[in-house]
Length: 331
Length: 218
Image 1 (tube, rainbow over the protein chains, first blue to last red):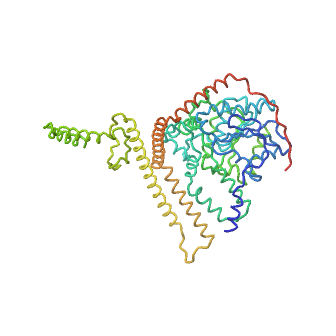
Image 2: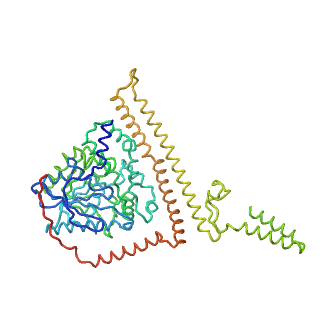
Image 3: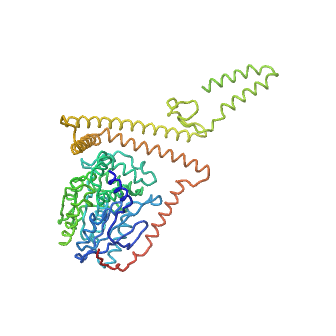
């Protein structure tokens, strides 16, 4: 036990993030990063990773041996990543239109301008996948290939506990005119599986070996889980009402910046990555994409992984980057 | 009741003011009664904290009257929201207890009797089995209507309570001439609108050269 305590103490300040990157653009609190290549380029079209507003994007590059980004870089992809930053009180009126049409669109325009090309590849993760779908629907000419990873599409599938809870909540009253605390969302997420996430996880930590690498990995994930940005009130309200409560990606009628999002308009190649053990975004929610789009080139890969395991598990490192790189290489 | 006290005070006044000699004292007595009765009329009553009034006896549905009408109503709304929150929490607590009981029953039914005490590995396995039973029982509860309704009610009641508290804080801030949230929000909205207008008039996104594609060996 003393060696475990020592290992925990030693790992207390270990920071997430590994690969070298460079800030290439900023807009408000958003930062756009480009990762330094580590292998011979294999794809001329850059890949932009659109992460969720909930939690921080460094989960994509947690540590050397648990990095989706490193896996993509090692396969010769040119990787960009959006860091949305930490919204504060001044961002409370920032809506989805601003996130998509100002910030995401701004990143895309910058990258296209850098490279002198007309379209790029998008990889949307979770909520970032929803943003990517919406962006592709609004600007089909700007997206060459789309990869959606653990992306909810049907927000009202039977296994979706979060959705069941949220449907009866008065979101207007909850948000008021403020932001939504990241801690409040974390409380909800932990409540999805309270025994596993608030107890068993720590027991597992204690019962394992005091191996520094294992402890450091645990601490980095722990850091990430509780490093939860507050959510800009207006965007949060729009997202929850339109998607969780009204399920508008499925039923139709979702509008961003006054423009209707119709997934049936999507005709580009799409790779849909699903975690069959995902407790946050049920597999059926992701799989619904197939029946809602018009793309003749649709690939779906379901891995026996959970929501977080899709980015940081050892298996994900072996399977996800090659799946993405191989799929892109043929398009 | 105030009406009884008022009737008594006026009756005494009329009795004692019959002679000119006692008129001054009677007038003084009535004046003091009225002063004492109305000394606190402009104070904001706070349910549950008013002196001598236990929370359960304070009528949340009492109409707001007088100059402090809005304060009274706000305090009533806050107290009502707090009560709703407490009720919802109690319902959740009850469901939680039921879940634990169900989980424990399932767990016990799965344990094999043994004459020897379990070793560390067996203990770990038992613990994991308990977690499985607990999560399975919890999932059944958490997906159920009563849990979803109680959870939503607790969030909604907490939101309502917070709104009333914020309104009270805002009223206090105005009194002290401090900036209020409404004021800051109003400024933020104007700024936001201004930014949108500027963006609409701004030229295209400035084109930059691609950053060098540095190769690094690790």
